[in-house]
Structure formats: C-alpha cells, structure tokens
Length: 181
Image (cartoon, rainbow, N blue to C red):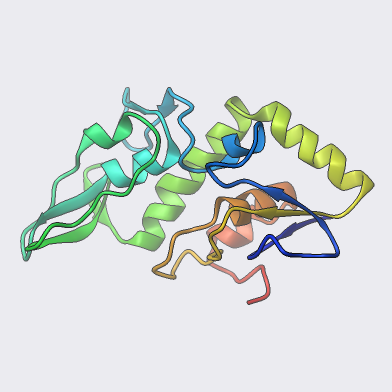
C-alpha cells in the first residue's frame, strides 16, 4: 500500500521523504530536482531541467492588466519560484500559444512532465518504492499538502506519485478528490 502523507510524522507507515533536500535517491522525485532534458509540453523542441522550471518558465507574467510573457530562463537549473514584482500579475500559463489557468497548467504541463520524468529519469527509484510497498505500507511526503488541481497552493509531487503508483492518476487529472482532507 502506498499513501500520500501531508506530514512526515506518521506512525502506521514507513514515510519516504521526497523533499528537495532529502537523501538520495528520493530527492530525485521532487518537482524541483534538476534532471535535464525534460520535454516542455506544448513547445516542440524545447527542454527544461526540472518540472517546476517548466511551470515557472511558462507562467505568463507582465504588467497588471496586460498579457504576460513566458521566461524560458526558468527552464535552466533546479526549480525555483518566479516572483511577481510590484505592478506585475500572472495572467495564466502558456500552453501551445494560449493562456490556461492553474488547474489546466497542472493537468497539461506539470503532471505530463512529471510522468515523463517518472518513466525516463527515475524508473529505478519508482520500482524500488513499488517493491517496498508490496512488503509493507509506505507513505510519500514532500512537505506540500495539496493534491487538488484547483487549490491555489503548491501541488504535491508526493500526491501525484502516490496517484501514479496506485493507478489513480486518471481521477487526479479529472480533479476528483482521491485523498482524505
């Protein structure tokens, strides 16, 4: 059994810490980890180094009341937030040349990019967790508590990985609640 944990202090499962500063190899499961060569959804031939870099690079930031612009500089390096300066706002996220809201960005950018990372960059770590979960209960934790695509809080990589490993990713993508609040 694999469970999404909102805290690392859980007594009935072995908690795997996936935070950016966690020990190897589990820190590699974090959205911020710098893998390199991750295809950017909606931008043919473009690559980023982290999943967070994709979201932040495609974040449309500009002067208040005007359409924002992407910043491909965020595709380079470990994931980092793109701050809003005074007089700026986020008008959405770019996907195939159109602006999408945060929930759609998670559905179209974050989750597909993360699935690609799971299948192409960290297969051995994912297999290790799956094998461990066949023997005992495992919890995944990354310090972020949101498993809801529509909540304006950082989406948890641990929640997405839990859904992926439990075969519940389709429900998550549809915005259905899959974890107890």
